[in-house]
Image (tube, rainbow, N blue to C red; front, side, top):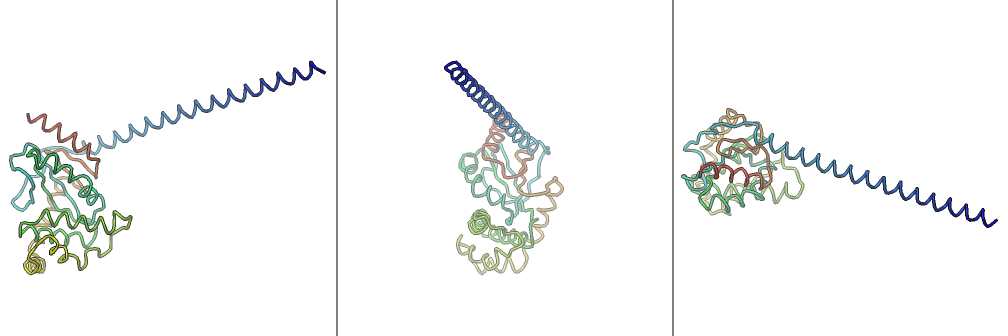
Length: 246
């Protein structure tokens, strides 16, 4: 009787040890799999950035007298970016990334920032671009540019609401004009006359000729970068260009 109990006890101990060993083996496999997936996802992300950066390069867009420019004309790095005021990723870039680029590189004379219109999303894209150009005629392009993107972000995309196909800016152009300190009558006359309609269309055509297919698209000293990439991607590319120019 005593021997039977002892054998049963040993069998139970062995069973528990085997179960525990199997559990540990499964855990090790899960950890290895998680590690492999983490490395794979990191590699995919890196490849995506590399593809975005190297999807085209060359001399980049030639600047024109119509291009809104921010920064020192003698800056060693020029960033030309094509945007659409109805584009959610353009709005995110303007709100989250562009201020850091301006503070670190534009305001320190290292980067010249150039904006190009690429109206592509919906029927409001071109009128919004023309409104910003009319603000530029009063020396307030960048203020109005920021106000448009801030409005669409705060009231739509930043709240998870899709603004594509919606008259989001209807009745807002003059409100934003007052907000940034424009002469509203002059601004209204500019818009009503379609003063910058051809300029906006020419900007889009220039983008098409440069291979732009969507927004935002950037050219950093001619090197194309597509999409609202993280700030660190821009910083590394700009710093590489600055190092090459020194």
